[in-house]
Amino acid sequence: MCGIVGYIGKRDVAPLLLEGLQRLEYRGYDSAGIVVTSPKATGLKMVKAKGRVRDLEARVPARFKGTTGIAHTRWATHGAPSDVNAHPHLSADQKVAVVHNGIIDNASDLRRKLEADGVEFLSETDTEVLTHLIARAQAETLEEKVRETLRVIEGTYGIAVLHADFPDRIVVARNGSPVVLGIGEKEMFVASDIAALVAHTRQIVTLDDGEMATLKADDFRTYTTEGTRTTAEPTTVEWEAASYDMGGHDTYMHKEIHEQAEAVDRVLRGRIDDRFSTVHLGGLNLDAREARQIRRVKILGCGTSYHAGMIGAQMIEELARIPADAEPASEFRYRNAVVDPDTLYVAVSQSGETYDVLAAVQELKRKGARVFGVVNVVGSAIAREADAGIYVHAGPEVCVVSTKCFTNTTVAFALLALHLGRTRDLSVRDGKRIIEGLRRLPEQITEILAHEDDIEKLAEQYAE
Ligand code: GLU
Image (tube, rainbow, N blue to C red; front, side):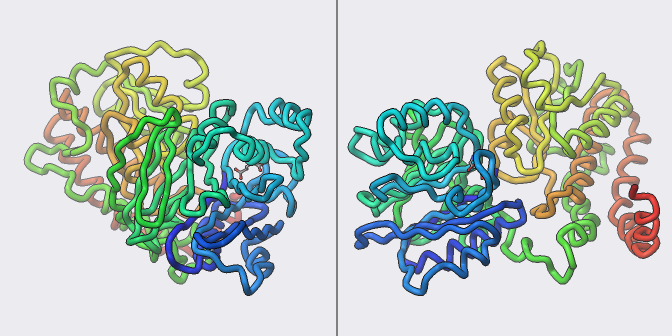
C-alpha cells in the first residue's frame, strides 16, 4: 500500500503534489505519476515514471499547469514496476484518472468481462479496471459513477478520482486503505498519510472504511458508499511539518532513536497520580468497578506492535494479576475466536491504520466486545473504531523500523498495567516504586545513548 496526494484550489498544483509525494517517499515505492487539470481546462494532463519522484519531476514539462490534481507513488502488486503500470490510470477517452492504494481482488474477472466488451487495457494493474468501469458507468454524477463502480469491486482501496467533465471536484473513497482529507482555506488536500498534509494544514478528516468524499476548492462532504451523508468534524494534528525532517541526523532511524527520551517524557506527562500511586488514563473510560470485572486481557497487534503487546501482557499479568496474552491480529481475525464480554481487548498500532488490526477491531465490535486502542496517530481509524484507549504520543515515526514508538507503546502498557494493578492488589508501595522507575526512564535512555559509539561497535559484532 503506497502513497496518494491530491489538491484542489487556486495554486499551481504540480509543485505542490510533487512535494507531497516526496513526503511519502519514506514508505517505499517503485514508480510515481501525476495528473492535473483546472476548471477551465478541456482535458487532463498526465506524466508517469518508473523510479524516484525526482525522475518524475524531471519529466514534468514546463507548461504543466493546473489547479486540481492527483498523484501517486506505487508499490506494485499487479504487474511489474514500469512507466505504464505507474498510476494514475486513464480511461480510453482520457477523461477519467484514478490513483489507487490497495488490491482489487476480483480484478481479473472484471478485466476479462471488460475485454470481452472491447475495452483495451494498457497496463497489467488491477487498478485499471476502476478507470474503465467509472468511464463506462451510466450514472450522471461523478459520485454516482464511482459508487456504481465500487459496488462491483471486491478488495481494498483508497482511491482518488478526477474526471475531465467534472473539473470542479475530486472524489475519493476508502475501504481498508487510509484516505485523509486536509482542510485548507479555499483549498482542499487529500492524502493517504498525514505526512503529506501537515506542511499545508493541520485540520484533517480521516475517512472511515466504506466512506467517500467529494472535495471542492471551498467545500467538502462525506457520505457512505451507499450515498448516505456522514458528519465529519475535522481534528487538529499536533505534529508539525518540521517533525518530518531529518533534523541533522543521517537517517530517520538515528533521529528517532535519539527522540526516545523526549517521547517517553510525553507519554508519561500528565498521567501520573502521586497521591494514590497510580496513573490517570483519560481516554480509558473505565471506572474502578469495571476495571475489577476484567477477567482476561487480549492484546492484538502486528509486527513490532505485537511484540510491544507481548511485553504489555507480561506486565499486566505481573502487576494486575489478570491473565493476559498477545496474539497477531492477522491470526485472530481469521480464526473465529470466542469473544468474551469479561475480556478487555487491546488493539495496538503505530499508524492506527494497520489493516489486520482494524479488521480485528471491527469484528470484535460487531460481536459486542469492549475494545481499547493503544495507538500513536491521533484520529486514525483504529483510534476512532475503538471504544476508548491510550495515545502513545511518540510523535511521527517516519523510519519503517520502529524505535521510539515501540518504546512508548511498552511504556503505555506499563501505565495500563499499573492502573489495572492499583485497582486490584498492587500495593501503594509497589505503585510508588514503579512510578519512580518510569520517571527515571528518560534520563536513563539519555545516559545509555551517550555510549552510542560503544553500542555501535557491539551492534556490528553481534548483528548477525
Ligand atoms: N494494486 C495496485 C498496483 O499494483 C496499487 C499498488 C499500491 O498500493 O501502490 O498497481
